[in-house]
Image (cartoon, rainbow, N blue to C red; front, top):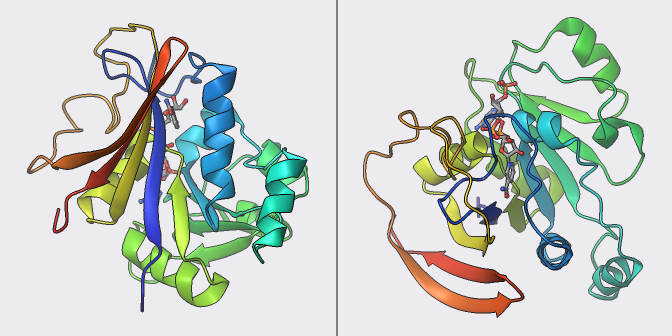
Amino acid sequence: MKLPRVAANFALSLDGKIAARAKGPTSFTSAADRRRMLELRAGADAILVGRGTIEADDIPMRLPSARLRAKRIRAGKTAEPLRVIFSNSGRLRKNLRVFRDGGPPVVVFTTRSMPASTKRWLDGVADVRIEPRGNRVDPRYALEALARDYGVRTALCEGGADLFRALVQAGLVRTLHVTFAPVIIGGAGAPTLLGPAPSSLLKRSIPLRLEGFFPRGDEAFATYRVAAGS
Ligand SMILES: NC(=O)c1ccc[n+]([C@@H]2O[C@H](COP(=O)([O-])OP(=O)(O)OC[C@H]3O[C@@H](n4cnc5c(N)ncnc54)[C@H](OP(=O)(O)O)[C@@H]3O)[C@@H](O)[C@H]2O)c1
């Protein structure tokens, strides 16, 4: 099974933080960064997020731009990418916008830990995929299912740190887009790309190759390719 090509996109403070506090919302980037995020989103068959990001930012995971939706349709795609949420616990709130606002299909990868009451209402608004092999979703299994059952060839991870770390540790991320934002946040509890220290330490570092770097206003947009075999 050919796995989807996975890219990730994050905004980073200049001291490497993705949010001011663990589980807090991200609010330090510009309208230009948001436009870039939507361009990247428009290029993917599926958007991937962890429960923490959905809870912190309550993002509907939509493509609000008519221009970008039309471009996708001209390319023979659905108007908007598939929305994919990861949650081992399955403890998702019914009132999150992603479940309320209509829009493209939602797929939830979870485990048997999902409360039965959650599964009942969620079955009405999403495809619930239960991990068959234990109490943690294996990201490779999820990507295989996305390729096989939903025709996903490209996926964009929009965070957060836990999901990104799981994908990186499984060697599944090919491209990393970052926006360097002109802000310094500080604080040991503020998560980096891989979460708060020390749980974020990788067994070995991941080499990256710079593919693009575009300053715009006070921000800079960079694209890195993950070295083969990492
Ligand atoms: N700066 C940026 O660009 C950016 C982007 C995105 C998010 N953020 C910020 O990052 C923070 C949220 O990050 P986070 O550390 O909470 O990470 P997260 O990955 O968004 O959420 C963590 C939760 O997602 C679920 N999860 C993650 N990986 C999983 C996997 N492989 N399989 C199954 N479930 C998985 C688990 O849910 P359960 O607990 O239910 O098991 C886990 O506790 C927020 O502050 C958000 O604003 C920043």
